[in-house]
Amino acid sequence: MCELVEGILAITLLGLFLAAAFAGPLLDVLGESSGGLHLVGASRTGKSTAAVVAASVWGKPTADAQLHPWRGTANGLEGIAAETTDTLLILDEMGQADGREVGDVVYMLANEAGKQRASRNGAARPRQSWRALFLSTGEITLAQKMGEAGKRVMAGLEVRLVNLPADAGADMGVFQDLHGKPDPVSFADYLQAAARANHGIAARAFLGRLAQDRAANAAGLRTELEVLRDKFLAEHVQHGANRLWITLETGTSPRWKAAVDHAGNRHPLGPCPRPWCSSRGPPKGGEPSSISGYASRCELEP
Image (cartoon, rainbow, N blue to C red; front, side, top):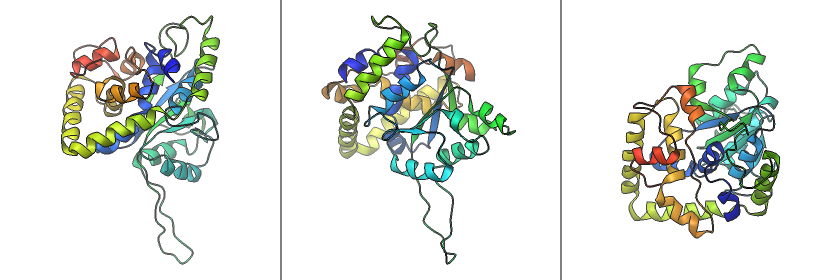
């Protein structure tokens, strides 16, 4: 896993997706609601590689384990969401989803509960519930997918699922540096092979440190994180920023870095997701140039 993360250092969107993989457990710590990040771009821009890398934090990054297709039904996704509560839910290729119900699925995932159903005798069945930061990929946005079915996306949906264009600004999709590989395809193949060979280690180290900190002083941990969050939100655009802040916290704070390093992993740091910033409007006081810049503004050590 160490060699995998070394190749991700300084890669904008890939580093962000990897950091997001660790963010799910912090939703409970902070009492934040669920929501998602959607990496959108043309074919062969590295979206699937980003999903594989993120999935490897928790386990085997394959379709029969940590990666799930958007083409499943809403009922089926309820069960998957419940199984991944407080960890990570990844939905790959939104283009395969049903445009008539994809918006309802996003609302359902963000609202943290499935449909209320009745048993044969009319009594209410227990509803499935969850809490998760979910990641999504696709060649089209949620609005475009819903538009195929003649539906219009509401503003509330765009807050629940934030679009991240799969363009790091180097004409190589999500990549900014190929780290010695001859082309983006070779680098993507290298990252995917490394992720499939080394997976499920980093999450255990991260959870161990988080459990230790909560057991020692749960109230103090929450207060510390709330102070950092409030400073971030005071300076940045609000739409979806809570979710982005939790992701950046796991990607920059030395609190989590030490635990992951101990498990033999380098910590993901890289330039900030400027495409997200520009798509939602500039942060207050100007746009920092890197995740380390975000960290310094939040008084985090990179």
